[in-house]
Length: 82
Image (tube, rainbow, N blue to C red; front, side, top):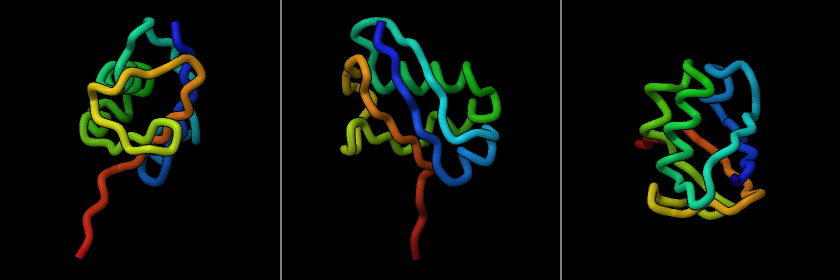
C-alpha cells in the first residue's frame, strides 16, 4: 500500500484548512485513484478534486499515472490566464 504525502496549494489549502494530507492507497493506485481518495479524505475538496492539476515527483501527471510508495504529490487548483 503506497503511503502518499499530498501537498495542497492555493485555494485547495484554504478549503482544506491544512497544507498537506497523507493518504494510504492500494498497490498500483493511479492519480485518478488519488483524486477519489483525496475527495473522500477532505470533503471540502470533493468537487474540486476532479479538476485539480496533479504533479507527481515534480512532473505533471494524468489520471492513468501509477503512484509509487513515497511519491511526492502536489495538488493545484486549475489556473486560468488572460
